[in-house]
Amino acid sequence: MRKDVFIETSNVTEFRQKIRTLEDRENGEPGIALVYGQAGRGKTETTRHHYALNGGVYLRVMQGWTQAAFLQELCFLTCGVRPRAASACKSKIIEALDVEPTTLFVDEADRLHVDRVEDLRDIYDVCGAPIVLIGERELKGLLGERRRIWSRVSQVVEFGPVVEEDVAILADEAAGLDVSAEACGSIVRHADGDFRLVWTLLGHLERAAKAKDTTKIDAAMVGVVSKKVASWRRS
Amino acid sequence: MKTDAMTALRDAASNLGRGGKELTNALLYAALGVPTQDTAERDRIRKRCTMLVRSGELVRIAPGRYTYNFKATPAQTHIIAAQMWRAIRSAGPGFTVQEITRLSGANYNYATKYIRHLEGEGYILRHGRDGNVLKYRMSSKGRQARNAPLPSKPITDPFEDERRAVHELVGLFLLRDPYQPAVRERIVTASRTILERFEKEEDAS
Image 1 (tube, each protein chain N blue to C red):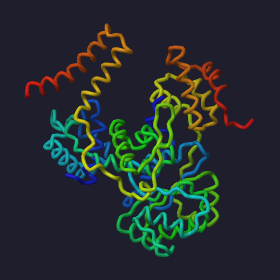
Image 2 (tube, helix red, strand yellow):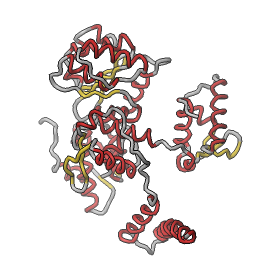
Image 3 (cartoon, chains in turn blue, green):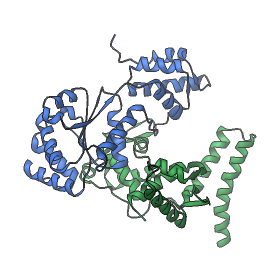
Image 4 (tube, rainbow over the protein chains, first blue to last red):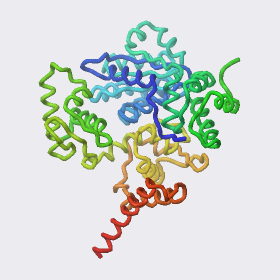
């Protein structure tokens, strides 16, 4: 299976549209964006793809970060220095973003303490740099805890489960398989909307199809192959 | 000329003109989201198209109709290297060349060479393998580098086309039926690529 294929799913399209609106300083709607969804839905992959192509600052949150540790890391990524004091870090970040407004992508933001989100709010309030917070469902609750944070969230992207069309496109582009509509439905049900599981299942299907010297996948073949892949669905 | 507007036009034109497709002014307006009533912006786009025609990137086949000439695209290796470096920086341990290609949109061959360069310079380290696929992780030196480390000299291979042709020939002979007309045609094209290069060099010497 080709692993160099990036599929533009409906989630990716929505993400792009909303981030474009967030980054457009003239006609857009600057603010904080919330990107959330269950694990395995492609949030991080989509964010990394956008970050790689368009730039910005990508910060992956570490468990148990203090204010100084968080701001030092953000300061290093933004302007290349790590001042000792948290307040100095914040000023440096604001200074750098003022000169060159850059989007801040904060991955695994659900692991942040709400006070760190307040730090990000300060940065946004002063320099208006777009902030994208990415995390699991708990992140929505975390931001909702404080009205003054939630009121600044201008874009919300929920990464929903993989749909049949995405499976058909992925199978065609990455493995050259022609998957019937019924089989696509079966794959989605088995993977429980999880993109990683769909990917694994398609890898197995590709091998099965090669063994049978065909490129057509039907529901029966999915049924046989899916037994080899452990489902995450809770019974 | 390097402006955001020019970059946007270049991107639109190269995407629309993929595979030698013809592109028109109307298509470019639509791709760049210019409304019908904004005649000033439409004029500017046409002027930029004329600049691209002069630089050879666009080939005017009739008034307002062009094809994109991919051979005249300005070199963007530093941009691609920056995109790859961002993809690497955001990756966890165990990333592969394919993953970086997928995220940065870089060419596989270029990505392989760039990653080899980074490994040689100590920005990334080996992190096991998955079958034949090598895995890497970022080193502490890499974590300290915010900007993409660029190789001091271009990492292009002077025999890249010829190597690709040999690779294709081997594949065709081992995996395909050389009696098939389509396969024969590809064999002839690949052989011609190799011959053209070496015959020319022999004549010169």
